[in-house]
Length: 227
Length: 383
Image (cartoon, rainbow over all chains, first blue to last red):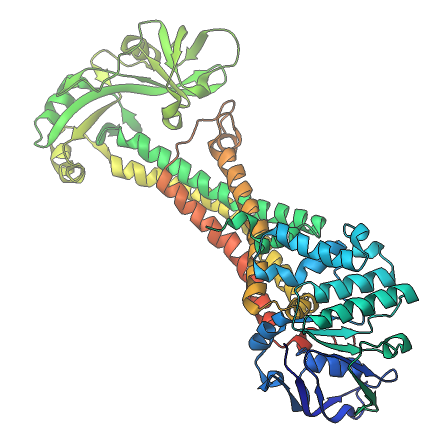
């Protein structure tokens, strides 16, 4: 069972085009439940992605802290946070895939430091791609895949090392209804493995999903728990 | 024991190199050339100096020549040997006949192994029969004719009875070994006279110690050359030539600076990619190891190929350019001799000159990026 993620007075200040600083996130204090599927929704520009990156340990908040299992992960050094991220998987909004690698190789990236045999890495990566109906495209380079296919590869990369925490940004973007349902279904199955899932989305298809345990709404840098 | 070759991290690094094949190819070619050019210069100087030292090791300890205001004069053999034989410390003394004559394609040095002397004569090689000659590799005319016409005091055609061992080619390249009688006629040396007197001593240190006694023992002005003087002269001569070549390698050194600068810039520009790897749980050690493997995969083969090219260019039989370039030899150049210890030193020098800067240029910027926070690796808003 994975632990809760607790945000304590988390604020994030940003500068845009040399103008005065503005608050992307404003004093957010909340608990994202462990071993549950948490959804953070909100309008475009509300700061959903920034909050996701802060709880995933990719961004440091300007003030406040993020505790995982009581540990102040957001205050850890870069080296310690890198090590912690081994138990986390992340799917980016803009995919951030390596265009000159194949889909299979992209999915293998989080597994490489585990120093297993290359055959085992390929097997694990292919298995996740198969679960997302992407096995046929495993050998294709990313540059030849559609937006929806890239998003599935992006998600497969987040799932491949069976992480305790999964951070997913807009998982159903560019997906038709059938694929969106399959992705939500796959995430719901992951939840059964006692994984904490944080989804950021403003897609009604995700909001309507029964598997969502906690729904947070982020507007103008402030968060409200809906369910 | 885990098989390193099947380690996913190593294989991943190799795969990463092949992501950009053109860049890989150009970098390999650059490093190969940067290694090959200075390594050729260094190996050539070592080969020349080492070969000269080998040859001089078998040469006489001292050589005495009679001089007059116009140059050198033939020495009366009997009187000279008697005089030098009386000097304590002289182990063996013998007269030599040699001089420069004109061959079909230019000047050639005529020598004769003469057995006229005191002490142990076992070192003197057997001279060819009258009318026959042994020739160095540089005296081979290339025609199928097995005769050689030499012009000196007289002109005579000789039958070529053999070619001198290529191992001594550095010293014997333009040599023609004659029977003493033929040599005397060709050089105009009267009977009982020789070109110089060669002396062997028991210890190398005695070379200079007996010089005053030898000067005193001989009743005419002489010039005495020691083996160590010859060695210094040859080494200095080769070092000067090598120095010119090494100057020519300055562009290669400038090139390694450019490669280093480009590598540093490339890896500092890899911030986003390094940030992504960190986002997927790669630790600083994983990232540094990955880029180290990557650089080794490019650098080690390139440096090895460069060294093989340099070695082949200098030591391979049939390669002509060192002789043509440095000595003006035509035709087959003499083979140089390899000294294992010095060659290993050259390998270490080249690794220090090319591979080490390349690895440092890779690892320092990567280490700098890998130890920073993930958010500083990413351009904000890209994610």
